[in-house]
Image (tube, rainbow, N blue to C red; front, side):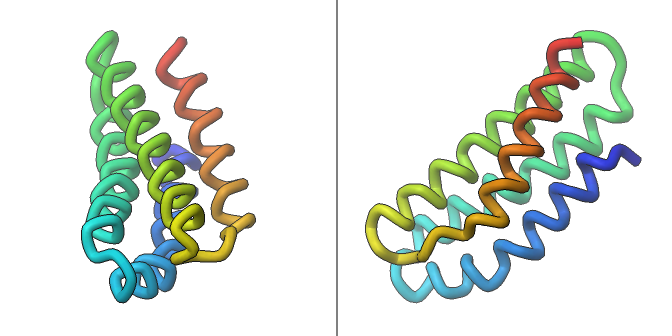
Length: 105
């Protein structure tokens, strides 16, 4: 399996306590963050087994979900629900960069 897949699972592990804390403040945003983050490894795994344009499509979907995950974190921080999770934001940037490369081969 691709390293990016493991990175996306590490992101979810890091997000778990943040999502739990966010649920107390904004359940809808927490639910959206959970769905977006979950979509990343699922689409990476599916894309890894596909070929051609279909493969790139799933990597683009994963990249979109990574962008949505980042936006949800930024919205939660803007509302004052979360402090900046710098390590997770750095990991998310790494994931987005790798997905860009994978989807533009």
